[in-house]
Amino acid sequence: MREAWCETIFLYLCGRFRTSQIKMEYIKTSIEGVWIIEPQVFKDARGYFMETWKQTDFDKNIGRHVEFVQDNESHSSYGVLRGLHMQAGEWSQAKLVRVIQGKVLDVAVDVRKGSKTFGKYVAVELSEDNKRQFFIPRGFAHGFLVLSEEATFVYKVDNVYAPQSEVCIRWNDPTIGIDWPIDREQVQTSEKDLKGISLKEYEVSLEV
Image (cartoon, one colour):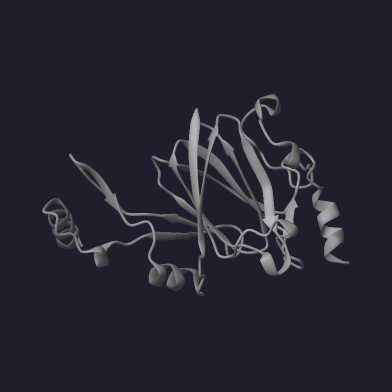
C-alpha cells in the first residue's frame, strides 16, 4: 500500500500521473440513495490535482447509471438560503453538488411517496476546503445555506429545467425541522421561496 502511494505521488510530481490510480470515497448516509463523495486530493508546491467526476466509477459505486445532462452554477453571499427546491413527476432531477468557493450547509429532504424515510433529511457541509460532493437522487427536495462571506455552488442534473414542474417546500417547515446553523433573522431568501408549501401540503398532493 505504501509503495503504491509513493508511486502515485512520484508520478504526480513528475507530471506523469495516471488517473486510473485515483480513488474517490463513496460514503453512505442515513437515507438510502443519498451519498457523500470525498475525492482524493494530491497537493504539492504548485497547488493540487483531483478528479471530480468519472462516469464508470460513479455508476459502479451508486449502483446504477445516472446520465447527467446539464451543469449549473450559482454565486451567493452569507446567509442566502436557496430551497427547498425540486421538480416533480417526469421532470424530477437527480443532482451531484459541490462548492468551489466558500462554504455551505447542503440539505436533501426525502419526499419520495411511500418512502420509510419520508420527511427525513441529510445535511452535509460542503466547502472549497473539504471538496466533498453530495449526490441527491430523484424524489428529494434540495436546499443550501451559505455559511461563508461568499460561495460558488456548482452541480450536475440528470434532467433539464422545467418550470411547470417546480415545487418549493418551505425551508423552515417545522415538520421537517432542519437545524439551520444561523439565526433566522440573518437568512436571505427569495419571495418565491417564502411562498413555498408545507411538507404536509406536498404529501397531500401525492395522493391526488
